[in-house]
Amino acid sequence: MFTFGKRHWLYALAMFLAVSACSHGFAAFWNDKAHRLPVAHSLTSTTQVRFFGVSSFLIRSGNSSLMIDGFLSRPPNALTRKVQPELSTVTSLLSAAGVPVARSCENSEGNGKSIDAVVAMHGHYDHALDTPLIAALTGATLIANREVLSASSRMARLFPDLCAITDFIEITGSGPIRISLGDIKLTLFETPHSTNPASTLLERLPADDAWEFPTSIRDLKSGISLAAHIETPDGAILILPTAGNIGPRLRNLNLEANTIFLGVGGLGWQSSKKIKRHILNSVVASGATKVIPIHWDAHAPAIDPSAPSLPIPAYENLNRALQALAELSKDNPDISILSIPTLNPFDPFLDPTTAKPN
Image: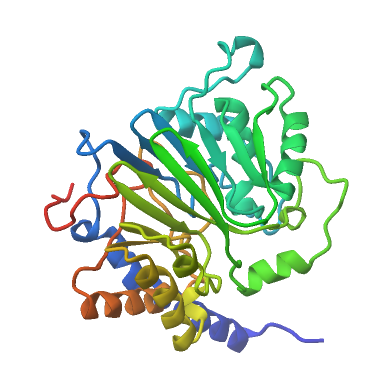
């Protein structure tokens, strides 16, 4: 029988420290306020964004609002413990972001929406665990694939006092979907999910068709994977939540953006050729001049509204992804690689050369 002796523990420790070092440079970059778009204490444009980690955003423009994903519960030890949406955590963070919620359908006033729509980029727990709950709490139109819509019925059984979700749009993968939300023009299009080992394993593990919350994350399958192009009166935003091979989609759809939120989870472990290809097909193809890395953070714990921050995981090679982006910026001085506040609002179109750190 194999025993884990002192030499093996030292080897494991050395490997852990080596992998951890792969993100130290990224941590310094993300925490350096010189690279960060400042908190918007007052409106400098009609568009403001809040970032909740992974690829979760609240976007307001004029009188319109849109939430992407909305993974707020961020449960600990999700690989080994069952998960469920945490009502108190979700309501607390929505309230901190200035979003009114209806915790009971009996206390809900009319059919008003405090968010116009909420979109699940795909069905994995770190994207869609809380999406149906947010729709129920805010009256938002739920835009999601079949897997997420199926999870919404389980959420309703978990929280029977909440209002039923009656306004939804199912994503079927029949081509790009364009939705007008007043001042926000939303285009959703299919894009491949990253082929990182963890996601691939979760997709291959069998799911329990009769699952209920709380459940294993292997029951929450991806389904159709999406990216989002968001046009506002102030400019256009592109959200690519996963580092899958996007190919020529942006060029084919003629989608350009001022600011791109670029999923880099797993990107640093890909070959140099694949990293360069991903950046060319995303950042360069979109014409974006502001690049903000996303989907790099560990998936727990939940954000503390009084001191919002995101943990940097030891398992990502974020330095390598950042280095590739830095080389792009060096060759193209008009492209800025930026960080953003957590939870607090910021202007996604602010000129970083005139922004003052705070």
